[in-house]
Image (cartoon, rainbow, N blue to C red; front, side):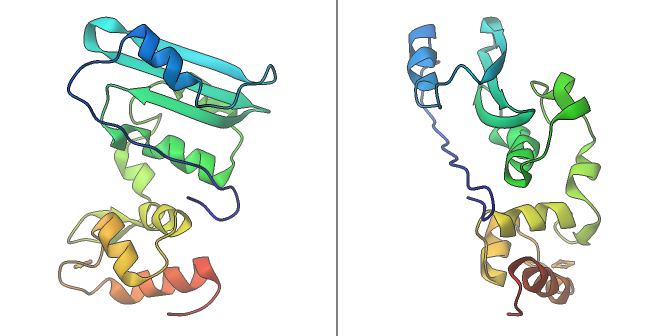
Length: 163
Ligand code: FES
């Protein structure tokens, strides 16, 4: 996913909690380099096992076990935008990140589904290239339809041509 800074996202689900051996095997799927710094949060009691890898103050990988994938959306956004972490570092392992859900959404574009401009932008950057793609990724534009012109405008701005 992502055009300028492609990333790979994998979601796994299973009935049994992962053990330390499983986590070590999972971590082997991430790039291995001495240049990478990693931050770890383990809470075995709640089966939360989080790890992020950093290179040059940018996210190079995220392994997030035990919380809803939605809690990683802001990290995915950081990776797609290839943003420097800077003052966000203390929040990297916090669920949902440092800002409220409202701020991660951006200005609300679709009032029916409560979807913001940043969410739509991230969906487009992740490969949603059509109105239908944005609708299935975010649900924006699936209610009254009054936001569809704005979504189409965003598609044109993000992709460089109108649809
Ligand atoms: S405002 Fe988006 S579908 Fe109604």
